[in-house]
Length: 76
Image (cartoon, rainbow, N blue to C red; front, side, top):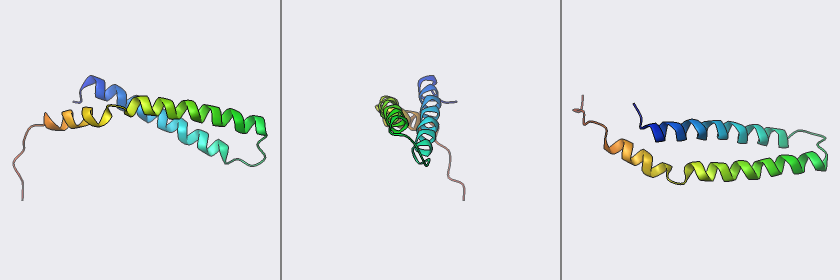
């Protein structure tokens, strides 16, 4: 089982990644008005900021989780 903080961060990161990909797909739609493009770009900016917050210390949390894994004998 993962550390509760890491588990929460990974869940929230996954949700934000899904939102970001959805916004990218919306940006590729034909016939968007400039207002619609502006709204999507503004939401993308917020999403990027949110992704940055969720990944700020993520690698350290993952490394900590790896370090506490029990050693298993190699199986050949």
